[in-house]
Length: 84
Image (tube, rainbow, N blue to C red):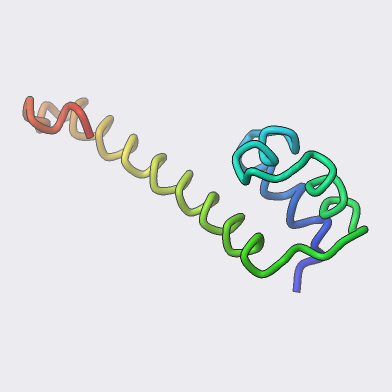
């Protein structure tokens, strides 16, 4: 299993955000994220699941953009799909 301190750092790196931004997204203090990142405190299970969901959400958004760009460049996209 991945070390918890690495989980926070890896998530921030993958999302392209700072630990402060992660704290704002999760609605926790900067100190909480810092403690998780340093391994001072354990990340609760809900926190781990939320970090995983954030990464899945980013991948989903990237996939949507890829589909939109592919359809647009292929002139397949209809006016209804421009707002995906």
